[in-house]
Amino acid sequence: MQEAKESRGPTLEAARFTFHGQIDCDSFAEFAQHRAARLDIEIQLGACDPTSATLSVRGQEALVDAFEMACSLGPYDCVVIDVERQTQL
Image (cartoon, rainbow, N blue to C red; front, side, top):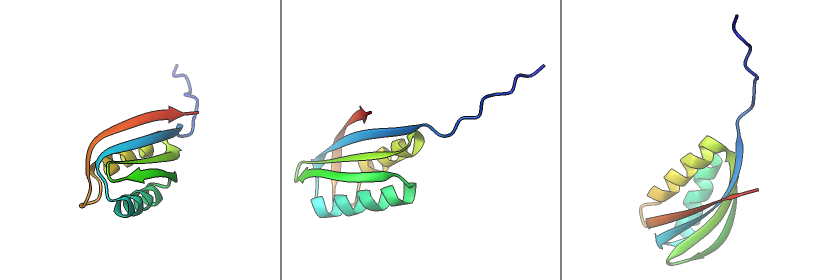
């Protein structure tokens, strides 16, 4: 006999990212907002300067992962060298 698996919705995650490298704040913010909208995740922009950009997102875990990857590759005029990720409650 096969047991019925419990149906669960997608796991939601909230994370704060700090992207380090050569950052054009306007370009990076526009890129991040566009990717967040395409992935249907919430975004809140934080501090940004020529060497780093910080932002917080909330959404399905797999889509938050996809967002991190997209922003790591970044817009064409930014070079991301490192990413710090903190899971938020």
